[in-house]
Image 1 (cartoon, rainbow, N blue to C red):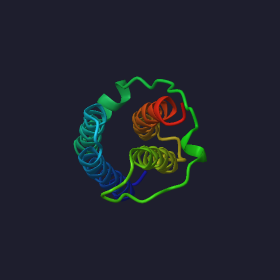
Image 2 (image 1 turned 90 degrees about the vertical axis):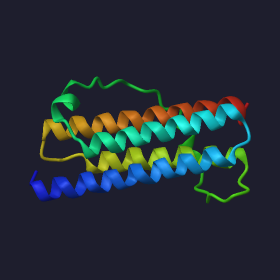
Image 3 (image 1 turned 180 degrees about the horizontal axis):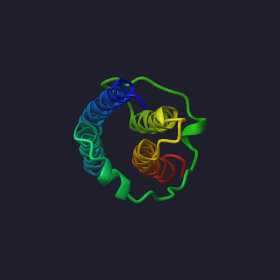
Length: 148
């Protein structure tokens, strides 16, 4: 992949991670339960970590990353997007968070190179894995607390 295109893709991914950090910080300020606040603050920190990883990309470190299989409950597949607002109810915050993670997974799948570049494919598979972990955690909470 040419250097300019690679740089543009990484900058785009960094911007998406910044947006995720902001969303989870805002969500942590709206929810009432301390456990959920902590969860969203933790997600914010993880997204910040993804941003820093992309800014200081170490392809050797990426090559050593272990890619795990994360379950997909597919709950977000059947939910509609909703908008974030200051008085948003807890189930809607979870829905937004699940959909954001779903969109991030799709984005990173779409950004994966088609030319067989193994290092870049591994990088995007790692990012997909991280977003899939978030989506799974959120779907599990939604299943346990909202759909019960």
